[in-house]
Length: 466
Image (cartoon, rainbow, N blue to C red; front, side, top):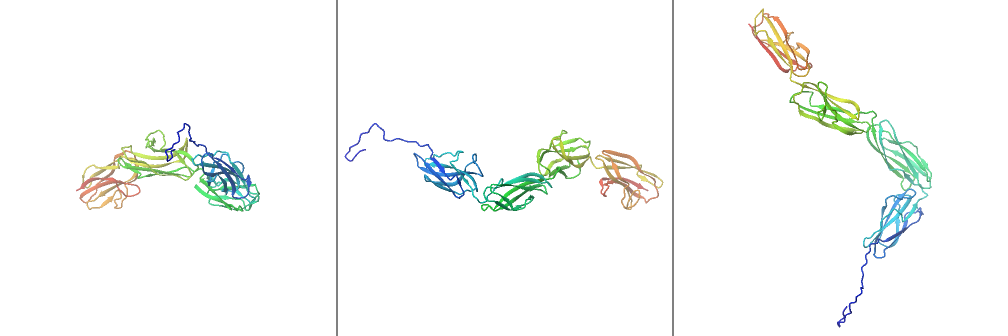
């Protein structure tokens, strides 16, 4: 240092200042009454820090109905102070019971103590008034068969000294409880309330039970309830949808499957195969004759639905004509669940056709006429009506053999075998009577057995009468 006259003190060899590093958190202590029936509970605190200023002290708590709350997590009481000592006025948020307290103190350098499992003080908070305590505030019954009953016991405890009166019990939905009210529970006593779940339909059910009592602090308590109904012995129900029932090569085959299930939860595989005309199964989606699941490990549960799913969408290649069948079934291991769903369709090699052949093409009275037919069915077996008619020079069409203009089959319900040929065989043989000269035609064709709708082409054999 130097004065106005220029005098200065000498620089000594000793040090006059030193640096101190503070890494120690404040020490904090708490005290409270060991037992009280009054709220709020006064929790006194004192925090000390030897080197730094105190910044904030915060209160933490945990709770049990009785006995130590050790092992539980500390809850922030949302109460803090910047003073070095004082009292927190703690209002018990969880009703009566055993409360334990701890505190966290922070200094100006942000040093703070850790919250360990040891409580700094504790208080048993109680009252002579009745106090209701429930063993749970919710319950899931799981799966119960429709028409059956699931039962659960809710424990009601009176933690007060005076008698607790349960004056009302209400339930909703498929849930019920049977005891008549009022129910009296002495101080410190317990009561096991039976609550039942009786589903009448499958699927998820939610509801509640409400308990009304003379506990002034919580006169009404609600317990949330849930359960699932299932149908005993139910198996998956599967259906197919095809864009049509008869195909030829090049046609689009569009197949879908859907399923629903109402039984108890289980895991199953869905298998889908196509049965060939010779009975060989071909499994999708691999198109292999070795059995493999279409969808593996499906979690079936009550109310499960498999939305309509496309299993095949393709233009058919050349395949052997005949009857084919889709089959779908669920398997749980080696067990098949219920019956397989099936959907049949036909692949045709083409429409049936007929050829007509006359022994000659010009006739007169007394000549012998012979008409032969050959039927060819390149596709699957089917039953048809076979018609034969004659076209007159006058323009009239007469069906044979009735010679009526009203359509009637020559051979009704004719079975055409798969890729089968019938004939040639003679179907008309007659000696020609006197007719109107002119041009005539024999006509032949097929229709379905249930309607008059020509299948394929109409065969024609032309002849002249002179």
